[in-house]
Length: 231
Image 1 (cartoon, rainbow, N blue to C red):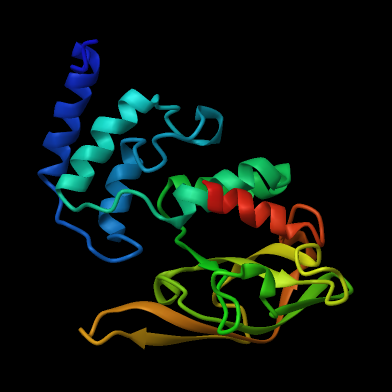
Image 2 (image 1 turned 180 degrees about the vertical axis):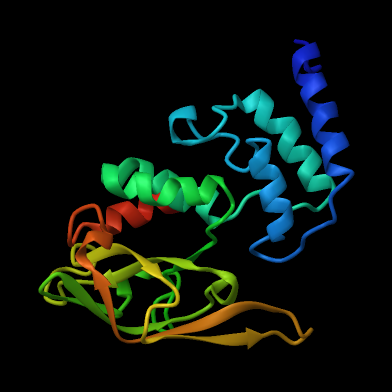
């Protein structure tokens, strides 16, 4: 079997190398905004996404040299929005939600953080206790998240919360999109021993989120969360 790149894929690899050599390395969790914008201009920020959602529909053989080049040069091409929030929205989001959120991800304008882990719910995410209570056209959210990568640099959050405290723990959760500047959200940095700031605590104090930001079915968020983790 010949494992060499085809002439077409080799040419794409050379194009990516030439482009990457003009960019600075990016070591943080959200990547550099200027790098994201340049990748978005070339249609490379969401390389593997279907074309109808703003991606390039790249095959694995196109993704491989791209990821290899980006990895060698320590350029963060992917982010939470492109890697799992967007793909999960494609599966579970309404048409309105897809039209609202996906263009901001592929353009590099919106940066997402993932609001899963809690002080008492890490590897067992189904133990989470952050509550989302329906109140008219809104949900009111109270609770705490921890180890939230990039929350300090994100304008959107992908939130798992408990909407039915009486249901079995895997069956009373729901998923929401949350604007990170919503009143009642507080982000506190967790700085590690080397002085780096990637992680955060995030607190929710009577945060009102429109019901239109519920993704998928109420109380079936565990399945949406699991698919996002799979991505």
